[in-house]
Length: 319
Image 1: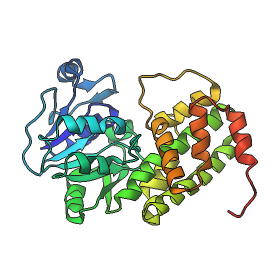
Image 2 (image 1 turned 135 degrees about the horizontal axis):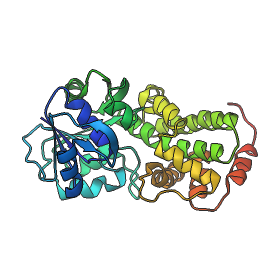
Image 3 (image 1 turned 180 degrees about the vertical axis):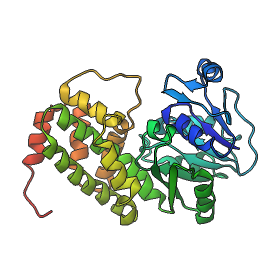
Image 4 (image 1 turned 90 degrees about the horizontal axis):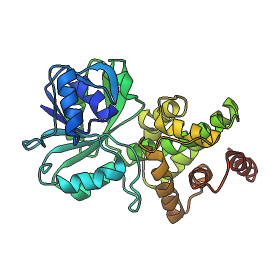
């Protein structure tokens, strides 16, 4: 049995994929959503048109789990602390796999750090990399990174979470995996804003390239392995997120560039992460100009045209 907590698009997609090999419990806080999934065998709100396998059991009742149970936490990073605090006893001694990306505002913590603080008896890990829920749910080939500091636990999880369409690679570099998954969302907002404002594909390519440089600079300063950022959880996720309308962060950037309203009910991890990253960058004294511009755009202190002028007028230097 594998447990998935959070019935958003990604949590549901992972539950669907895993239910092809094991029984899966999909927990949701919404009684209404659970009843609908039980009745229609679809998550019509998040993944319309995809049938839930018979081995997938939606429930609103919080399950009782045995020691070492595999639990996927598909809740937003900014809500992870509260969720774990509420259920810390139930998660004791479990294998907790964060399926969220971002940096917690106020602490600068990534998901595995939050897990380690709130449930110290658990084995914390993170599932990250270039993926869209629709692709996973429909059985399309996808590769992800499983980051776990405990190499033995990571190998066990790699085997448990691999499915015919979902290939899992593993790493012990949780810092690099967390930062790659978080920072690429900030760059995706910048790229969306550039395209939304009509600045062109060349501008997007420049932002992606220089954004990756920012990601790598912060990751190296905080002790990450450069190879991690060059892999699925860094460069791979950056490429997908900055080039597809399926990305919420990219769509949010498009709305900024077009000066349109964005649906406030849609979670945009990169928006909160950007300010948390900027605070951390200033603390460790590294230069992150694209992140700084994204924060100013979100706060309404700059227009996209002004932001691009600021980036283009920076002092010339070697790449």
